[in-house]
Image (cartoon, rainbow, N blue to C red; front, side, top):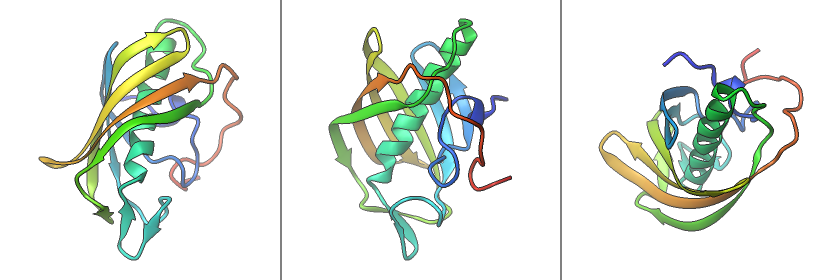
Length: 150
């Protein structure tokens, strides 16, 4: 799917984790990312599985931004996210692992959203998480590096 990630998420530099939009529709978004040394919570040769929550949040944000742009609305800024429930099946994820994340809308009331997300390493479920998100209505601030690239 040819959609530029940097147009859908406000994250830049080492906080921009998702690299590719694989699929997106009105209810869900699926993205791909590769674990890198630059990721938060990287130590030794892997990242702590807590980073998977951020992958789900960025995937949900990308899906919401895609839908708003499709509908002719401004994409807006980032989201304030809370964890409603999280189950981790791996403690750490090795560098260079390609992860597939899916975030599916469960509920929405104005700017408050609830998403269920999964992060997969091939056929292995790394985590399942439910997040609550409140969308920031401020416009995106400036453009910068994405994934540490110029």
